[in-house]
Length: 472
Image (cartoon, rainbow, N blue to C red; front, side, top):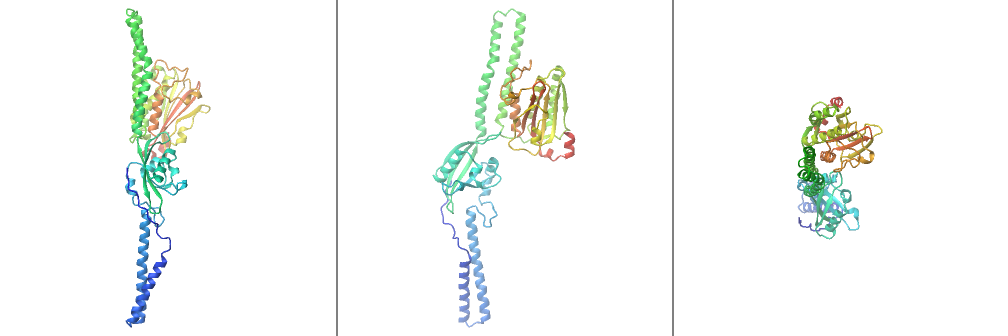
């Protein structure tokens, strides 16, 4: 991107406007009086005409001066009446999809003179700016970006760098700084453009992570299958009992590999679009109902009761992806069932209208509690999914690592239906994509409770308070 520099110009005179107005008006007054006297006209009429001509001349000069001042201030992005109106180029830059800042600076030694004097809508959203102008360091604190800006301002050279935002939804950005020369009042100007490359970088990371995880986690079941195949082709060829036992183990290992590949693919797809929030509206309570109906036979087989508390249809509307919300509910409920024994109760509830603080608050006194994901910006209200079990519980030191890929708590076995170690990682990334949160509470020997909360859709936020209270 290359833009022509602005030509330097001297600032307008700082003296007031009254003296040229008075001078020209006075000259006009004297001229009319002189002409009247020379023509021997009526003195009264001559004086009135002179005053009229003087006033008209003065007003014309004053209007021209004010127009010139307004034009000068408009070229510099200022408002002549001091009301902070947008500069004339604002509409053009505002519709551009890339975040753009217009930077102005004084002397290199004066750090406070580096200001952004205009930020388009995309830049205000990206940098979370509540105003269109301010100190540059208040908008961008990355040293590499500030160095690129200084190079454009004071060396009049193009500069580029990489920048990654902080937060639970980081953005990978390529930053361009371009010099614009001098403004009319002598300040140095530069253009700062952010190009979002999050998706490209995410594709690269996802591919690398998938290959690394697949090669590591598939190695064990593949080695097991290879060993059993060699055994069956060897001395166990004619042993019917050993053959059936080995074939059963091989089938379970193959099913585990299939689940592992499915979970890895699912996690990769979620991470690929994690920076793009969903736009559809989905009833969280209906998603949970579908999951509970599907898992009811498994719960009955294990002798575990499911206690459900769900709001009426249409009250738990969230802005979300239905398939992914079902994944969240299925992973959490399936986890609770796996670690429950016969006679236990798994409690599943959906609450609506909670604030972020209320959603993340603990319900069990004395239990260890840890937020595994907290949204960068709190929504007005949330729908909250709580899933609790009466299983062995998790020690406090293990809580922080629960959402790591393939992490398993030492000493805990979930029986024949062992998982892939990716379920909670999937839940966290889905909650992150939905701009929600995830909390865990646990106590050894008493049980574990997971809380996932998602922003309510606008229609649900406007619901009657009485209906919300009754449902929750």
